Amino acid sequence: MNFCILFGGNSYEHEISIVSAISLKKLLPNLEHFIFLDGQGDFYLIPKDKMQSTFFSQKNYLKCTKLYLQSGGFYQKSFLGFKPLLLPTILCLVHGGDGEDGKIASLLDFFKIPFIGPRNSACVLSFDKELTKLLCYNRDVKSLPFTILYKHEEIPSNLTFPLIIKPARLGSSIGISLAKNQEELEYALEVAFEFDEKVLIEPFINGIKEYNLAGFKGKDGLVFSIIEEPQKKEFLDFDKKYLDFSRTKEIQKANLTPQLEEKLKDNFAKIYNHLFEGALIRCDFFIKDEECYLNEINPIPGSLANYLFSDFKTALEDLSKALPKPKDIRIAYEFLHKIQFAKGK
Image (cartoon, rainbow, N blue to C red; front, side, top):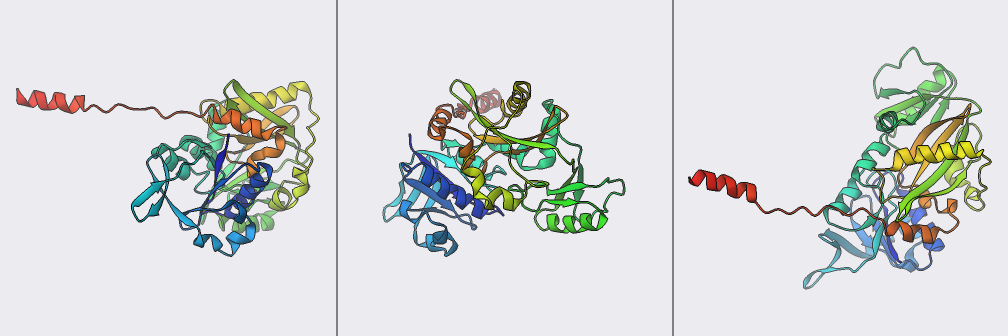
């Protein structure tokens, strides 16, 4: 089965999305269709041989065919009007805003376009880290205690160092800092508030183990990747996550007891079921004293976490056969007819 990669978007993770699309193009050489969403909200059909980073940084994509969303799919403008493109299932690789906040999911659902990716409600609950905490509470999944701080609010006086400071609505480890004292906290908050008006503050626990697990629901149920223990210093920052490409070359399965492995998968299932159907997601967990805590949900992980699957192509095909189908609501105006009939009596 083939797919059409949708990538780009108006977010701080725009360039990461481009890198993800290029990496999947290399991994899946049969891919022929690529749609780029630029920062102004316009769609462009990108030829396969132009899928190179400089093509986008130099804005050469503006010379490509512009596309338009209409019912049933993407269209291109012609002398006779709009001509539909016969594209395969959309594979959404729009990280951050537009992709992970629910805008693209809503558009694709509204225009009845089949796609792989989180639906709107899943996006809303995973994009905002405070709402993710509430999701954890509701689904009996442990997470670290936290404090929410908005820009221009007074810093709470009861915080205990060290602390991790995160923009509440941003991924890819952008804007995340470790603060070991009040001076570092104030600087970390300045950094985080550059990206979001809302910041999440958590305790930093030295020596805590971190594990990544990806998965999706295929036609026969949940399918899990291997469990990875990412290599890090104190915490997994942006440079370690994206500039150290060696971590995607050879992934070693984490050395976990069967009991802890099962606990991670059980927590993943609690988060995924009845919310993330149609998407391949990655959950990042902490393990401390044999207890499991959710760190964050990656609803559209970088390069779709392909490096965690032994046969990524087969995994995508399995997922594509289990996409949720929008309910076809029959509108017959019976209620309005009854009202009109009653008025006529």
